[in-house]
Length: 144
Image (cartoon, rainbow, N blue to C red; front, side, top):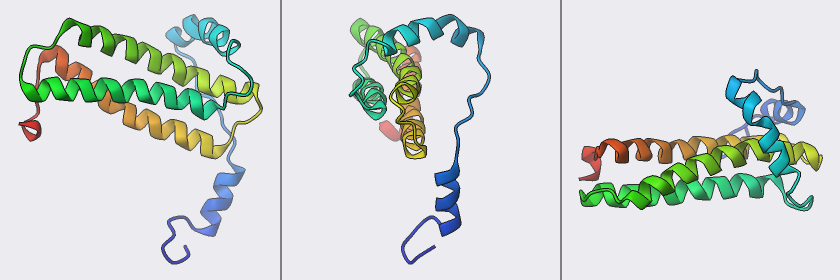
């Protein structure tokens, strides 16, 4: 790699040549795929897939921030937060399935878009963990 760089020239070339290959579908994927396709077809064609990804990520981050704040306080978790966490989880997964469909629909799929999507997926896991901690009202010692 060049000075201060992370990827070698060969690594950059491999990213440029990368082609997405979908994995196998689960029963839930098969069941919900028509719903995701229906919603994706209602998105405007000018909307970038990364916007869809970002909206899902924002749902996760709002969930995470509220969950952490209530867990830190050590107070009872309000019902509305359980409902919000449920909604945001469903919205996140729905939008996560829609972003790839939008990319293929607009012919704007790219390795960088996939990297962005997977990065948001990784960060979204924090909100999922916090939602479970809210359910069991577990406050990690590092938060106290």
